[in-house]
Length: 177
Ligand code: SF4
Image 1 (cartoon, rainbow, N blue to C red):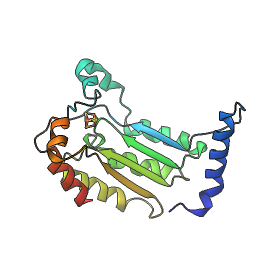
Image 2: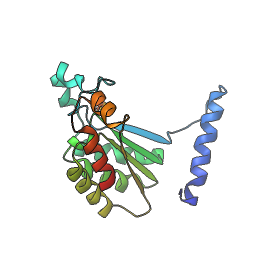
Image 3: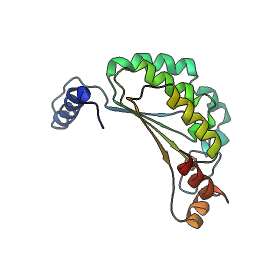
């Protein structure tokens, strides 16, 4: 549930966004920010081309932000008062420092209320370990949500993901966290 103290900020952002749709320009800042932590992915889904990015242009991996870059970014985002950060990939849990990145985002963006991470659930133990570490190092006021992608029945999911055990691992991750 949203902290009532955040309500005025939320209302201001929604009103500003709606007014700007009428053509009136008002100073505004985002309610939600989405960050792709990496374009690396260990799946080759038929519905997605992200996994091709580094295969076709391996040098682009050098452009990924480091933990230090993220710390600088989060400190600068603090003045925007975002309430919601969404972390996606690629597969974000392929970054060893994902837990540190999330913890630093929450430490540095004071008004943050909700963090979500989307995963393909490839490694239940690793994901559980990272999520537990994040939980132990953040305020209980922050809502942390892990979204595990499921694209259909086991057969459909495995077919679309191009992985024999994709559904089993996603399900195990879902139940583990
Ligand atoms: S797991 Fe996600 S990012 Fe990776 S290829 Fe599939 S849809 Fe794309």
